[in-house]
Image 1 (tube, rainbow, N blue to C red):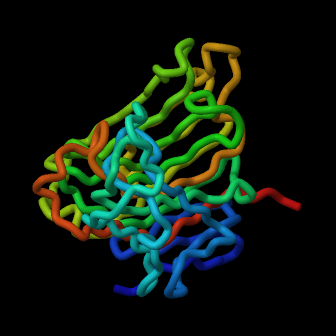
Image 2: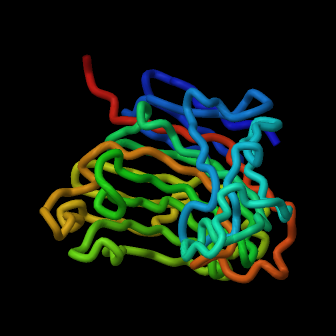
Length: 279
């Protein structure tokens, strides 16, 4: 499969995919990773989460489960048993009371030096729509603790469908305000939808945020309605950074007993654009 490439034509970015031509008029590319060099992902652009991190998920995150191969970032979920180096006898914390690691995967975080405010994000990726798997493309605000820093889920797959979500803070830090949308996999005309690459897109301006897959609008919000209830701050009026991860089980991923391993989540590219301004 030929790799898609951005081409600059008369100061207009044109992105070509296998299925369609997406024209981002009056946008300029400000940051991207094409994952063209085989080996470890670029550590100048990405950092890696480590350990048991969130949502009582089953996987232990480790950098070695992420590699670049044949023009794609490959995040591999594996079933493998090894000792938990952070195990604490009689701990009440789920991160530390597991004596053994049973599954491993990877989570990449865009370094905050490359965080962006407003613009367009394009991610071409291929997921496996299988119970137990929880792949994601999402953003977090650079300032504040979650959920008061804001969360935008450009893509999550779990419970049989795609989720496109936004979250901001309520008066209770353990109960964020969610604005979510869900599209069942069977609603797509193609029964083999997850066997192909697709383009997820976030369009973000001062007034709104919109999430698309292959030009299909999944969810949108007005930023005037996204203020944190504690102090009125707006977590989507600050720079955000990207995360790419493949989670397993946990609060939403589901039962792993029939999940096939190893499982691979492929990302062809990540591109961030901003509106072109005249100099």
